[in-house]
Amino acid sequence: MMTRRGVVGGIAAAGAAVALTAGTPAAAAEPSPAGLVPTDPLLHLLRRATYGPSPASIAEIRRLGAAAWLDRQLNPAAIPDPVADGVVARLPLARLSIAEIRSRVSAGTLKQYSWDPMWQLGWAAIARAIWSERQLLEVMTDFWSNHLNVTCPQGDVWDSRIDYDTMIRQHALGTFAGLLKASARHPAMLTYLDNRFSGKDAPNENYGRELLELHTVGLAYTEADVKNAARLLTGLTVDNGTGKYRYDAARHATGAIRVLAFQHANATTAGGEAAALELLDYLAMHQATARRIVTKLCVRFVADEPPASLITTLIKVYLDNRTAIVPVLRALFTSAEFAASIGAKTRTPLEDLAATVRTLGYGPAATGTKFLESLYWMARDAGQAPLFWGPPNGYPDVAAAWASPSGLLVRWNFHLSIAAGWWPETLVRPANLLTGMVGALPATYGALIERTATRLLGVVPPAAQTAALAQFYGKTPASPLKVNDPAAGWMYPYLMGMLLNSPSFALR
Image 1 (cartoon, rainbow, N blue to C red):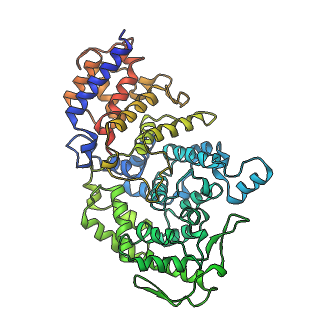
Image 2 (image 1 turned 180 degrees about the vertical axis):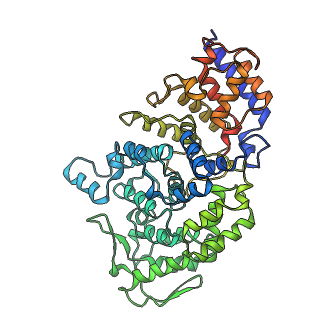
Image 3 (image 1 turned 120 degrees about the vertical axis):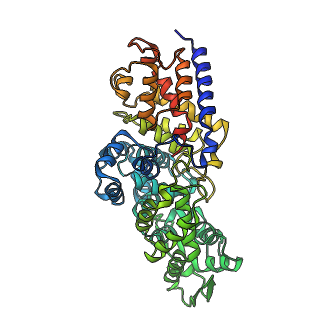
């Protein structure tokens, strides 16, 4: 029997051979070499519009076809989601409104400023990313949560961050104008960027600046624009008694303002809220905002450096549809540029973690939430716990931001740990792992490797990779595989882990 040291050394040698044969994940931001990822357009759509293909999602998209599958995902309310809903139901604090959290504090069943609801929200995000049938909704919720970032957990938003997530979900496939206005009047955003403390005597510029620079037009503003935006936004605040949004006319700074080409007399305190909403509508429809939003969508779904032709097309779609997101997504996913982008994106750590469980087809533990906590800590160790980014600009979405040896090692460790059922140990796996993955016992080591790779990656490895992986077991691809061989039993997870470590899996 191979020793533990021999196993680890063999993994390193086989992994190095795989990497040298196929290239590194850091290089995968460029279009991949032929054969590194599947060229099947259905699998390409799954890899981009979800957190990764699962056996069930592959079967579904092959049954429905790309157009019907996309239509279904763009109407998530019509999709039953019993598995994810059942898991999230185990996290009661992750679903509380502002009033419910404050009521529990008043009753003494929850401490004021407690982070417990926000921790549960992070665990719920993991559960939904992996097991939700509404995959595109989950991807877009994550996209907007980064674009309009409010760090979670964070002490100042202890009572409002859960409700902010609910708001993002409600608007994730609506209009950007609606989402922007909802965010601007949400206690979590007003608190996070200090607008709740802004008043006519001392306007706070934090939200006004980030509204322009991060949320809408980018760097196409002046300091005067920031100051005027901050003045117009005074009065949008939070009621200290209820924790809910309210407009306080007494705190609103009146007087004519100009932000970019937007002008308003802003003559009365009573009309201050309506004036602020007019500004937000103007910013949402600004040409620079349209470019910023569609560029970020193209970076998310197409390439780290997306084609200018696609950006130009989508700007028109965005503006013609008055910031509606669904037409933009439909145009993006059906574009020639998207079809040609196979191999041009690399998974972030969170995407890698979710894709690992999804491609394995493992189910959630039958009871409890410890497995969700374990998965959350794995994501945090890899640098991307859901919603946890500190600055207001959200997690980066390009390969260069995540390319490091230490980050790669963390991913390799959780690939094997999850596949083998070591941690989390309660995920539901096939009783017989090998037959659950590939069916009947393959005749040779080469067949075992190829069938497992096809099951997990969608592609057959190059001959050099197959040979390197067979050598890990001290065999050649032609060597007969026997039912009592370690490769068919306790050492089979190592093959799964090494395949998940490959550049093919790193790409999405």
